[in-house]
Length: 417
Image (spheres, rainbow, N blue to C red):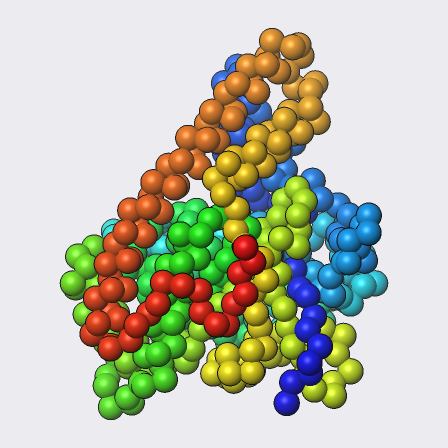
């Protein structure tokens, strides 16, 4: 039985810890600074978010008449350069049990398989286990620097600078760490078969992201509906699909995907719950929330119960009881570009001494946005190509499985207009 009360959770937002080398934009911005100044940009202090622990506490309780939220998972960018958690964030999470310190882990995938060449892959949102962890500064919910060190040590292929996506997912499953794949159709350049292999193995897929638009949401909702229909009719007598995903031919991918979804394979999720996150860097932290129904009669504080449901409760129960529902919607391209521009201007002002004069400062404000826009548009072009192929595969798979895989959002989400 579930409570009629719904708790609002921000499940994807960033803070000052998404800074410098931890930021996926660091190389691009630092390169722009070096081109403007003609000097090494090692001391340039770049951050993708300037949100402080104090501001996060304000979002929790509600600022300027806003209602506030019940829980916040801070999911800062994390890669091999991150060795510790921000002390102010640890202090906040240690004193406020409605705040958890998660992570948005940057990963890679080998592409093509066997080549030894690794490309940036979809990121993984890690939320932690139902139990508190210890960090310098106190006990808190979420992940710790020790966990981050361990995952870097265990999940990185020898030839790669970064940890591998499937190893990360397996690590989370083995260690009962709640997790979701972050905006899996956007922000990377891996091929569709590898994306499908990843999302078919994960129980929580971020279908609505505050930094991306409706096309990705529509496609991911279609995939989730297809996956869940196949899972409901799965026949254990069908063996798992052998070998690796095929090339980029729609017919071959469809045959492989249908076989994979119908197989009783431990690496294929028993069901998928649509997930949403605001991916906020500068504000509007609750533009996408997960609404959570805790168990009836529980003296729920929120975070440990929610994580326990993510880790322990079967997907079909979560879906049938509408335990998790998305509330909110993604951003359009203009809004994303506007936020990037704002970040560049703010960071440039913070580092004004680097430029020693208005001319250099003006050149940075001309160059950095241009490079950032080019990178964003390059990602959009890749997303369009991947999405068109995915539409074809979903149409063919739905026909093969006799499943409608409707293009509209499923009943498990409430995407606001």
